[in-house]
Image 1 (cartoon, chains in turn brown, purple):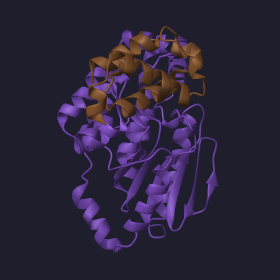
Image 2: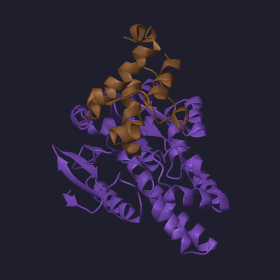
Image 3: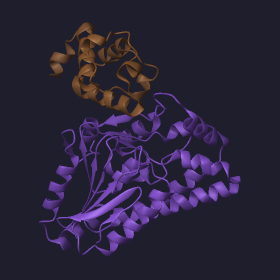
Image 4: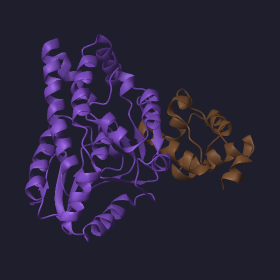
Amino acid sequence: MKQGVSMASSEQTLAEVLDLASKHFKVSRDALVPEDDFFEKLGIDSLQALELLSRLENHFRVELPDYEMQGVSDFKTLAERIQERL
Amino acid sequence: MKAHEGKTLSWDVVDDVAELRLHRTPCNEIGTTTLEELEHFVAALQSATDDVHALIVSSALDAGFCAGADLRELYAGMQEATPEERLSGVRRFLERIHACMNALDAWPNPTIAAVHGVCFGGGLELALVCDVIVADRMARFCFPELRLGLIPGFGGIPRLKRDVGNAVVRDLLLTGRSLNATRAHAVGLVGQLVGEGAALRAARSMAQQMGKFDRATARAAKQFIKPIPHEALQHEIDVFCELLARPAVEEGLRKFVSSDAVQPYLP
């Protein structure tokens, strides 16, 4: 899986982030766009944000240091941070 | 050992294994009530050493194992006290919680922390007193104390140093970042990594396996392989109190308790 993930394009990474957020936080995939503020759109608090971080790390098999997530609130930037570590 | 239902934690015995469950919302923050109940639990556990063969510590809350010390209570207490009273009060609290942690650490029979979700600060320190940490894939481990101008105060650094390499200790402590369970398993902090929601079941299975061995042999093995770093633990209390006396810490605590940020845990 790591090999497949490492070859993912930015578009694929973003699509997987949106799919994962939709699935685990029970929000329609059609309702999510890259520029959305995921705290608002998913209705999550700080503890649930950590859950999202864990799910993303487990899915992409990367580590995303919390401090690199500071100030990140939209799906597009989140996917870019992940892409940098694939 | 009689089952007990407390305000912040409860315990009972299942198949000759003592089970301690934390259940103080929002995420088992450790304040004076938890400390008092933990002291009662430790006394009960020590008197049942020959009746139960293992201990499992877990959380009944979805949010996670434990988010650490109750910083709101700490800050409120500081507002009502003189600088001297603050220091003596905090030192008393630390000495009491260290006594509990040391007693759990030294309890002769095997101990297991079944961890899910957040395991931060004092929560990680509680998990570290246990012989083995069983974690589900969604668990996260963190020492965020430096963001407040403090170091972990419940025995965290000496016990983390006992279990993992110093490079991992520095990474965790000096960045304040959280490690996911997979990484924590890879560096040796977590003994067993299990699926989401499966930590308690796996811990119970582990406790039953541990109970198959001759008790005296298991106790001798534990005493041999798990030294308690008493000197470093005492030093930690002194360093914590020195740091707490600085105005920057009060300001850090004030910012934390008044924060409405969506990511207040971030350093």
